[in-house]
Image (cartoon, rainbow, N blue to C red; front, top):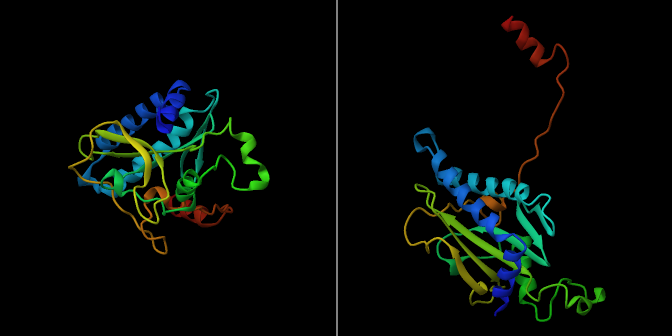
Length: 229
């Protein structure tokens, strides 16, 4: 068995892959059902809905599951289990066209997987060799997903990301998890925010913090209420 086969076997045995796969399919189906172009929906709103639903519902799915921790990192879902770090990313185009440079977290997993002898720590002073039997040698797992905006049919790949900034494949190993390899249909949008890193997508954009201010009696709310009375 290869390293990816080992990872899939462990994650499947720990109850990660089945509920996660079901969630991805459900989220795409619901997003397609709710998609109404005549009301202003477009590919960007579809992609944002998928991203936020997967993030929020994914974390809730694994709350309280023994040996599995779901959390939100870099505005996206991250699942920790048996030494593995699983993250989800939307796929633009073919599986070999994916890039990891969009954010430090996105690239960091590929870089760590690529380092020879790297286990779980960047600092040699932390004695990573002590943890050779605990942390998998390539612990970062990435799930690349996409779906049809009309039918909601989803496709997902699972693989070991590789730092390919100097060329070559972005994967050490990758395999089709479910669905059909995308060949037609509308791809999810490439969203570039002002002052953002080129190539950054909606699942990498920061969520704005809104200021909350109290309204004193007689303020705007009070004056409005008086005019309506």
